[in-house]
Length: 133
Image (cartoon, rainbow, N blue to C red; front, side, top):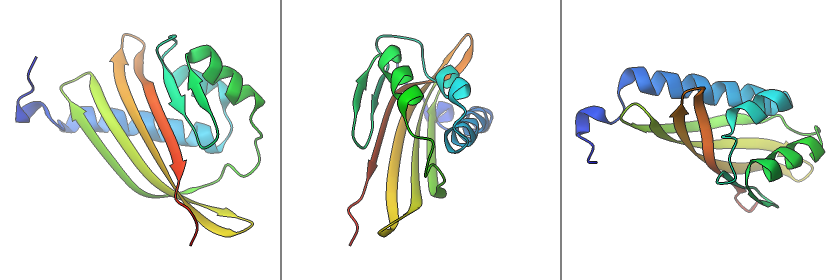
């Protein structure tokens, strides 16, 4: 299936994905594990690569969330880039900064979102940080 340019970044779809992403952000920084679990696709095919972990499948992602420390989750978003393709697929890239013992670190988060019957869900995610200078 090819996408026409009219189907890229339709305002209504961008607004929906932005709402889902901001809901994810609030759940992440608030350690709302139930909402974080809800926003990931419940599938063995879901993948999340983090700063220190490589998680394959919803069960591994859910177990990581439950065992993760709730400390130092606050972060400030510097930039968000969302691109939607049609009504059912989107990418979201977030640049953020977080305060730490060694100063401010810059992080990056990339997610692929798919619309299912239950709503928008993350099917793939990657989080990494730039080295501090």
